[in-house]
Image: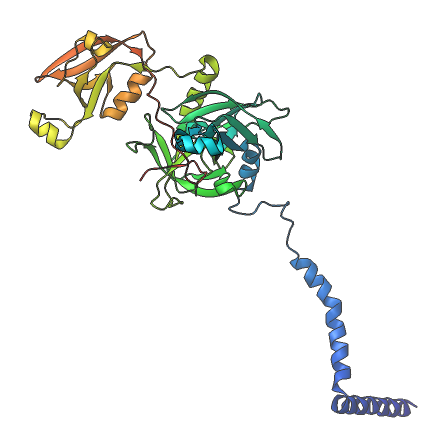
Length: 404
C-alpha cells in the first residue's frame, strides 16, 4: 500500500515538472506575468516609504521665505508726479501768427512721473522713503502689497540724508519691525524688497558687504550699509531687512556704469532713518548742530606743506564770519582734532559729530595752531537748510541715484 502511494506521488511530480518545462519552453511570458503581479503587490509598500514629507512639515534648508513674508506686506510702491512749468510759445511774438492762430497762450506739457518704494513703519500710516523719490511732487500715490491704494501726504523730508516721511490714512496697515544696527555684522544675509522697474514687488538676496560707507557724494550725511543684494531703479525707498524680516536700512543708491545692478548697493541704516523719522514727526524738520567752518581732510601733501606730523583731524580752510567757530576763536589754518573729547579723523566725522550736538549747547573744540594745543569753547548753532537744487527732468521715470 505504501509503495503504491509513493508511486502515485512520483508520477504526479513528474507530470507537474513536465508541464512546467513545456510552459517555460513554449509560453515563458506566463511565468513573467506571475512574477510581475508579485512585484505590483510589493511596489505600493516601497512607494509609501519614499513619499517626501510635506513642505509645511519642515522648512527647506537655506530658505528665507519666513523673513520675506513677514516684511513684504509693509513695503509699498510709490508713484509721484509733478506738473512741468508751462512755457509760452515764442511764435506768439509774431503778429502774423497771432492773426491766423489767435493768442493761444501757453504750451502745456505732460506731467513728469517717477516710481519708487517705501516702508510702512507705523500702523498709524507713516511711511519712510527717499527724499529724491518725492522731491517736488505735486501728487503722491501709494500702492500696498494687498492691492489697496491711497493718496499720501508729505509730512517732511531731509535732503541731507535723502529721507522723507509720508502719511496715508487706511485701516489695518501692516508695519515693519525695526532692527538694531548694533547687532549687524559684515557677512550677514539680507533681503532687498521693492518694486524695480515697475515689474511688481520683488525680493532679492545678498549679504552686507560693508558698514559705514562714506565719501560717496550721494548725500551730505553718509553712513551707508553696502550690500550686493540686487537693487535697481524703482527700489529706492524700499526695505533692506535681515533674514527675520526686521528693517535694517532704506535702499537708496547703486554704484553703476550702466544704470543697472552691478552688485554694489547702498542703504541708509535704520538708526539714522529712525532718528530722522522721529524728528520729522515731532517738529516737521530735522534739527542739527553747526559751527560754521569749511573743513578739509589732511592729505599727505597738506601734512608735508604744513610740516604736520599727523594724518588725522581736519584743517580749517575757512570760517564763517560771525558764526559759532568765529566767535569761539577758530582761525583758518587750525587743525581740529577733537570735539568734546571725541577724536576727529576726517571731515565726515566732524560733520556727523557736530550735527548730533543740540543747537544752543556748548562744545569743547581741541585744535592745534602753530604746533600749540588749544581748547576753545563754541556755542553750537543750528545748521541752515541746504540750498535747493534746480529741478531736473527725469529721463526714464526711475529715481535711483548712481555714484559714478
